Length: 217
Image (cartoon, rainbow, N blue to C red; front, side, top):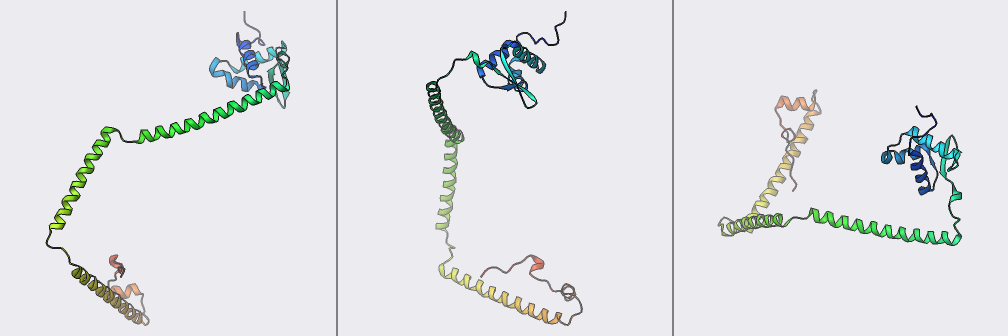
């Protein structure tokens, strides 16, 4: 014989009653279903029916909140809490909260330390790195030795002479570029075509055509 449509799944009522009493806060049927579905495998229909039955039996309270029903444990079953007890609970909450914050801070410190240790080189990696650095240093020492022993060093006087020649050529380049620009501008004043066409006909190639820029002095 099939069960009545209003009968909840076996065990569902006990699970929901225990849950509401332990949590002692209001829930909608959707909230209860969402919180217990994974752990107990209850369907939404079974949750709704069980809550309605518990409310009809007076084991829990039911109230309308807007367009949905809210269910919560019958408060008459709980002892009356005095102001002193409430103050004690508040003090315990503050103490536990402070402890939780302290533990969270400790966890953050340990996570940072773990991250630092994880990113650090292992002993074999450090030994390999040291060998590579020694090899690199040996190469630098050899290069330095060859440079010191070389006989073709540039003297300060030669270096100064090269720098002066560079300045002279740079100055001449700038001067000739300016003269060429002024000359072409003068010709273009009476030239019927564009500057580009003039350069193409005459065969003038500019620095820009070859991506050459005048270096800094």
